Image (cartoon, rainbow, N blue to C red):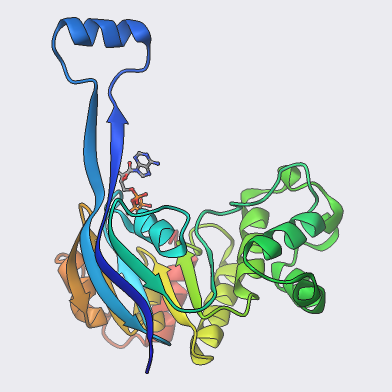
Length: 262
Ligand SMILES: Nc1ncnc2c1ncn2[C@@H]1O[C@H](COP(=O)(O)OP(=O)(O)OP(=O)(O)O)[C@@H](O)[C@H]1O
């Protein structure tokens, strides 16, 4: 197997502004209060992923998962450390990121496909498949500013998942969208997983992580506190969560989860 992603000592700092107006800042300065605070959203994280591995990236809100994904796909540069990736990366990091609100679904499909590295010919050849998967029907010629958030997610996911990528990054793709669409997304991700694509799947939904992933990484306040087997990773994160419901198959567990707000 060949290495797909190598992350070595990566940190990303952000600065929090405590005061919004000049007056607030003047008052804070007079009182010798701090004006800003810098913190590490990702803190000295290292791991290696082999081509074809499917990784569940888990952690509580604000633990740095999205930031790490942005660093992996090059949207953000790390402040420290290095990231090496092999091959083409596609993914859905923020729903509708890269969509232009005044352009139609069709136009955005071409724009977004190009941003994800597809040639015009590639997009032409996959156009029908992408539209069919997104199932946005007659809204294809409507500006995306008129789309519902679910429709945005459908089109965004559909484009990303139809890129012939070596690495697929999926940030809470199942958080938006209705149950049939979530189910379709899971099936599609399983399909690209079988094709040997490396998958990075950010989710709070444990049954879908169990069904989708070979390995789990857990972030806590930016630090990688677990890297290993899926069930152990989930236990590490949710000490309090009951294990798999007795008698329930993994498929039934995913199904139950898709029905709830994942
Ligand atoms: N552009 C930014 N500027 C400043 N702070 C940021 C920025 N992006 C993220 N943060 C902060 O970095 C921390 C990590 O955020 P991140 O979105 O990576 O967390 P997450 O694990 O993906 O959370 P969630 O599960 O809620 O999606 C949070 O405290 C967040 O407020």
